[in-house]
Length: 386
Image (cartoon, rainbow, N blue to C red; front, side, top):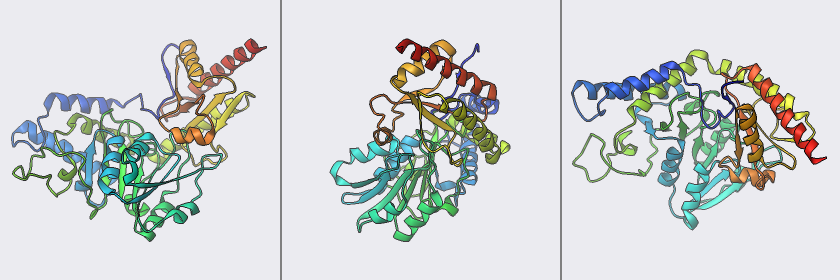
């Protein structure tokens, strides 16, 4: 194949819709600063931002658009949520499946906050009974990923939401890997704070994300600054979303995110998921029969993300991914995937994994080409060892 064959959609989707690119381009050329003036260009920016909030609120079933806060990505959203809700002496529960965007904010709090990190089994699945068994008098929050960016495991969010409601815990969800392929309802799933990014399954540009906050939950701002309203106050305004938004918003990014969500909605989550499932199953079937290939995760369960992670016995994952790129122009992800505890649980911290992540924009021809490339590289590797 002459062009890049792209299988790294869990990192960022590559093939953005033309409507997304046009929205970003138009906003860059025409928008002023939203909420900072009453002239045409400022009002246009404000309209884009407002429409973006409404679009996100409808997509995630948020009660009111003003409870949608725009950030640069899910990492910023998670930092705001974790550091803005927890206090010294609090206890928080999370899992080994988490990305460093959850883990590092916890670690930065040091001994101020007590942590329980739930283990997983050999397939990357969580025992939900352990959550209730881990709850203490000072437990404040459950924060977890909706889907593992390494193993493809999808957590039962409705079950987790019910546990949190029963025990009065904040439920903070990292939807980085699921937004755009799995339906998410804040109301029906009991989610208190939903953190998402725009550049993956929502087909938006990089540098835009957000958090959706249930009414009545007050989060301490991570940063303070200009909001365009109540400028005489020495502190951030209490009203949402300005309470958590300081400084100029990424209006072009919001415009692109809005069009990305519209694109996803026009196709339908069910159709997207159907296509992704066909692709990952074909890929898994093709590589799992190779004797030296070891796959991680539960592939008997179709309710998983379109991710297949594996390693070749005796070969460093980075070396293997580099050969795929250099020899076949196949783009995938190797290494630790910013999720160190998953690799410790799978005992792959010394050599990492190779991750293929699929989008409905991939084709069966591309999948078959990747299977051929992997088989060829492994075959040459085995011959060289003998």
